[in-house]
Length: 283
Image 1 (cartoon, one colour):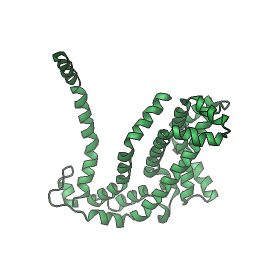
Image 2 (cartoon, rainbow, N blue to C red):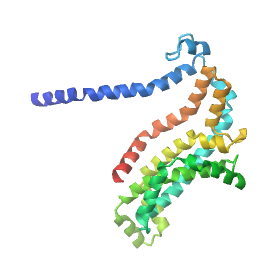
Image 3 (tube, rainbow, N blue to C red):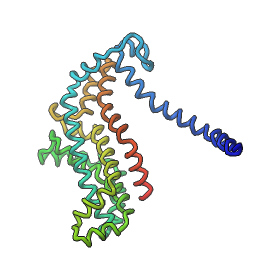
Image 4 (cartoon, rainbow, N blue to C red):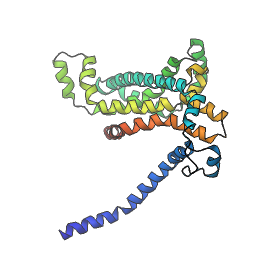
C-alpha cells in the first residue's frame, strides 16, 4: 500500500511541468476572449483607460442592440447561415461520394488522386481568384450566394475527401460483401453501411466546413457586393471601418460574430477531437 502511494506521489510530481504548461496555454488562449467580453460591456472611455480588465464603472448592455442595428446583423447573419449550411450539405455529399470511390471501389489511379487532393489542400485558393472572378462575372454568379457556395465546395471538398477516406479505408470488407450478397447497390452500401459507420468523420467534416464557411472573408468580400447578400464577416469589416474608435460597439459586434461558433464548438468538441484523432490514426 505504501509503495503504491509512493508511486502515485512520484507520478504526480513528474506531471507538474505538464500541468504548468497546460495552465499557461489555457490562460494564453482565454486572454483574448476575456478581453473581448470585457470590452463589449464597457463605454469607449473606459476601454481607453482599462483595455484588459473587467468593467468597473458599470456594465453597458446597450452596446449589443446598438451593434446589432448598426451592423445589419439581422441580414448578414441570415446570409452567413445560408452560406454555412449550403456549404456543409454540398461538401458532405461531394466528399462522401469521392472518399467512398477512392477508398472502396478500387478506382484506377486512386492513390494518385488522393495525393492530388492532399497537395490541393496545401495550395492557396487566392491563386485562382482573378480568373475565377472573371468567369463568375460572365456566368452571372457574382452577388449570388449560390456562386460563393460553389466556390466553398471546391475549396473545402479536397480536405474533407482526404479525411473521410481515412475513415473508410479502415472498414472491414466483410460489411460490404454481406450487403452486396443481399442485393444492395453501391449507393445503398454507401448510404446504409459505410455512412453510419463513419458518421464521426462526417460530423467532423461538417464542423470544420461550417467554421470555415462562417469565418471566410476574402472570397465573400470579392464576390458579394450588394448589402442584401453580404455575410457576417463583411459586416464586421464595414462596422470596424465606420466606428474605428468606438471599441465598445466593435467588441460587441465581434462577440455576436464569434458566439455561434463558440457554442457550436463546445457542443461538438468531443466528437470533433475524436473524429480528427481517429481519422489521423487511420490515415
